[in-house]
Image (cartoon, rainbow, N blue to C red; front, side, top):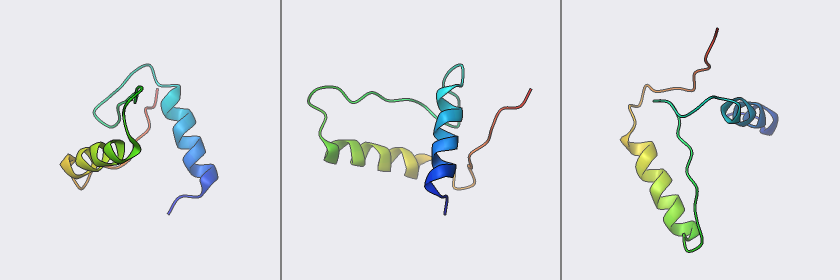
Length: 60
């Protein structure tokens, strides 16, 4: 399990990326998007991914 500091470092790295990739994508929940619906959405995304997919960083 990652520590809060490690998670923050990963998030900071992703926020500096030039755009989305096959590894991650950004979503914006607007006005009427409930927390419950948001959780269902992320759960669906997580289960649709290949189990061997892991966090990767870009180099170079």
